[in-house]
Amino acid sequence: MPPALHRPVFLAGIVLGIGLGGFVDGIVLHQVLQWHHMLSDHADHPVTTVAGLESNTLADGLFHVGTWVATVAGIGLLWRARLASRAWSVLALLGGLTVGWGVFNLAEGTVNHHLLGLHHVRDDLGGPLGWDLAFLASGVVLVAVGLVVARAARVNEAGPADVHVAVEASR
Image (cartoon, rainbow, N blue to C red):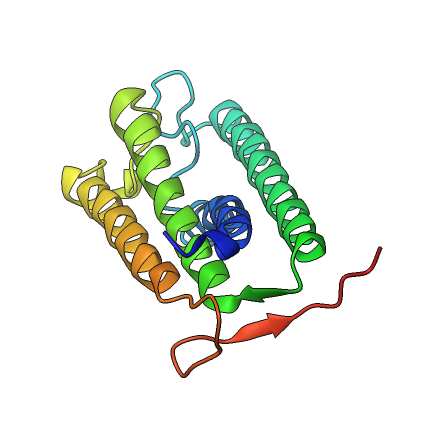
């Protein structure tokens, strides 16, 4: 955790990171690479039929609505943190963003890949377990790296390990 002074920025970064991590997943894995869709491993929604693609496209769209809501909430929290403090740490924000992306990977991977079995990282390969485990491992690494970065945030001085952004309090 970063110093208490930077915790609102860190929290905003986590929520924003969850939303942005979801966007990366949805845009890159669902749309660009087309490795899976939200329901692509569910027998009632096969991607080999028009009806299955329609239901997967709808589910992907609802997923993107959720990532958009998380992103907007993160921006709102960041704005609130900006109004509450005259200076805040970029490292706390970057650490929070990284932790949030990792939390997204861990939650999405655990719930959708393993508990509900809605899809796997690579449904185009028959859903091999290795890809799902690598996705979870990436979440663990992102959380660990984010916590290390956030801990480097300094409270009183801007040194080489941190950059503080001066913010004018406008009320």
